[in-house]
Length: 165
Image: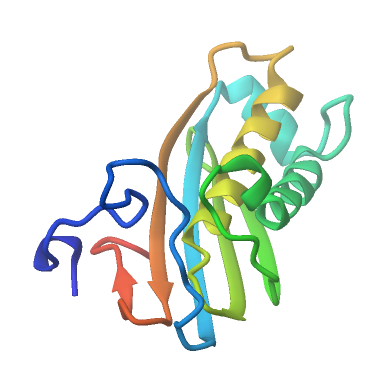
């Protein structure tokens, strides 16, 4: 089922029009997961430093990976209406590509609500960490394409972006 197959509904808005946390108490506990990505576009000079782990602050990929995992675990503290979710797994992969680095995340849980926001938070925090660590070399970095690649589990079923790897 795609987003266009579903009738429009704002689950985080109550009948009175006010924001609310969705009640997931009646949902079944199921295996759920999500993958997300972001791309940080950067200069060739910075890309070579990242590739060679030659930045003075340490390994950009290692630090960004840890930042992403930490963000996945703290998503409910960052996004107001997210449920705190006990994660079974969170991983962040950072690959050097033409023009920048691609950040891919995967988060899994057994719970009553999905983990798309945790996967997105991990990708965003990792991307921001890349920018923080590289800004002395390249102030013009840009984060592109922050998105959910795939989600599974729960009542809404499986979603996969058409061009997802």
